[in-house]
Each structure stands twice: as structure tokens, then as C-alpha cells.
Image 1 (tube, one colour):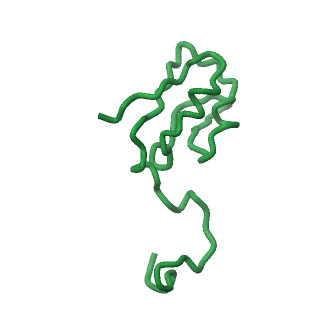
Image 2: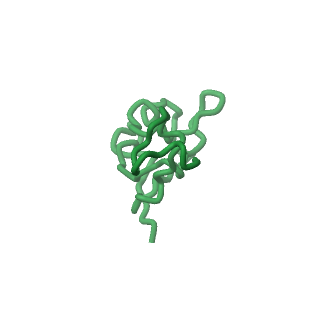
Length: 88
């Protein structure tokens, strides 16, 4: 981003959350147990930050650069395949 994109601290051009890494806000990190996960995509549906990585119709991980650690994916997982782990 150059100085032309900002006016007194306000963003003047359109963008998406993809442009801004917000993962450093997180204190908890989602961890998936692939032995339990059934690739139902429920976590993907409910993730408010589009942090679930899907490849070939399988959940393969998390975009931690955007994940805020809200835990919605873990709460909504019907198989309890996702747990939230402390960053510390």
C-alpha cells in the first residue's frame, strides 16, 4: 500500500479482508484432527473470515494469517474434529 491509498488514516480504495492479515489478533488456534474430520464443510460454511482451506473437496487446514481464533469452526463441527489450542 502506498501513501495514495490512505487519507488521514482512512482507506479510500475498495478491498477485501484477503488484503489484510488479521491473524495476529488470535490467542487460540484451530487444530483439526484429520482422523476424525469427515470433510462435511460445516466449518467452512460458518467461518466468518473464510479461513478454512479447501482443496479437492477436502478441508486441508486454516489460513492462520486471517484466523482470529473465534472458535466458531470448532463449535459447529459435528464430529468435534476441530479444537482450539492456546497460542502460548
